[in-house]
View 1 (cartoon, rainbow, N blue to C red):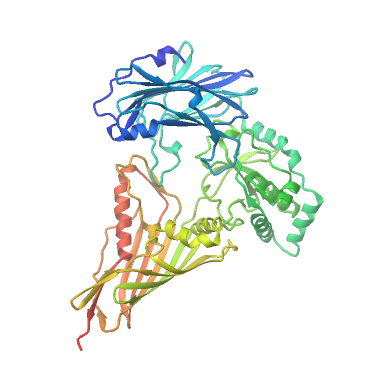
View 2 (cartoon, rainbow, N blue to C red; view 1 turned 120 degrees about the horizontal axis):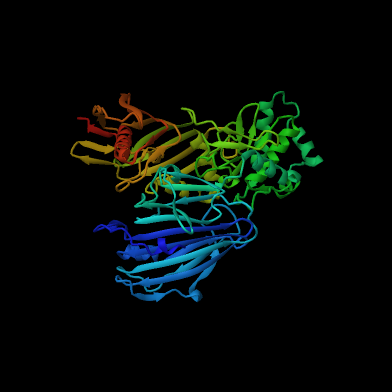
Length: 605
């Protein structure tokens, strides 16, 4: 860690800098040292200033994830100082402890080193230095993805590379040239964007200042061919699997039907156990072991599906994809991928049997629309782009009938029919919950916790190629109010409300996107109570921003019922942070077309 970087004066910090964040980093340096075949290690140097109680809470401990099978972690310094820089206390190794890493949804051998920070209080400064050293021999530089941002402001953020850097290739966003010191080269960003989480964010790589570094000698065809060779002994189905695949497609006349039959079999007969896809976790189980275990990770699902399709006469290829963001084709490295699926060249379709709630044979794999996939062909490894979502990717149809009880309470009978991506999401969510808990969990998930849900059914959960229907009956208390000879109230939206509500964000910093085109159609009817007549509803003319939604809604009298028809279409769109207020306003107006005021007037006798 060059003294020229750690000891250089920090640029003057403005008054009230980071006041609303509770703390900030005065300086953060990540230093990486690499010697081919000998050593790879990185050191994270952080110098922070704590401003208030929220900053104390955020910096009172650090959780460092690491893989004990492949790396060592060294806590070099934990030091708390007063505002003038005088040391108050230092961390003790005896206070640190290790836990299993349960932060992600994938199983791995990773651990978390918990580092408590003693005697921290507002006004203090904190210095923390942690080093990781890779175990074993690394003959090539591992793919490095580095963000200059943190969840609180950073006055100065630096990435420093030491050692054999001439054989490396990098891409920086925004573009920046490395600077040189005698010990190596570095990239520096002053006041990078704060990397806080906000709803509907795109991948961090699309808006945060980032840099990616990889070994310049790597090439995609070589990487793919070597990987295929390393798992070749896992790509040989035994006789029983070949026989079973042929029995599944017996009598089927075309490949479309064969793909659907085999994909459905793998999807429904294997339990998905997510295991991290990484440098030391890329080898799948053998097909026979997968069938015997009846569970597997993405590699296991993909290998079994690909082998059964090939046996049935349907050409199929394994494909590597990544959920974290776009693949940087200029920097070849398998470390960019975190998932494996199957590509069917004949149809151009991608199949992911780990999506348990989707029609795997026909649906675009969830979370991967528009992403590039590396097709693992021994003679011609290449990239193919997964299709983007079409305009009709997702639909929600609502039938809701309301009747008054005791003048003020409303009993609702509702049927929600979901198709496409949202049906797959919700079906997968429900499948992971025990039947006895589904009603409670769904109420909470859909923002309906305050209603009295007396009946609930979701079906069919075991047919992912069919629309998903939710049927329920619930009571909303005190929805209408009587004043003199009038009953008035707001027709409350049901389960579709959660799909039309935009979350509030205070001073949004990051861009946002709607990734899945959605169509919502609601038909709502309310029985006019005995002794009353319906007053004519006010005509609403909303000022919607068509970039975010196109909606219409009308309410009219049909006999002794009021009937409301509502339609809303949300397109796929990417927008700037400054446009979020307009998006929220549009969605609020769209919801207002559905949640209409009704007025009933007593009939004179």
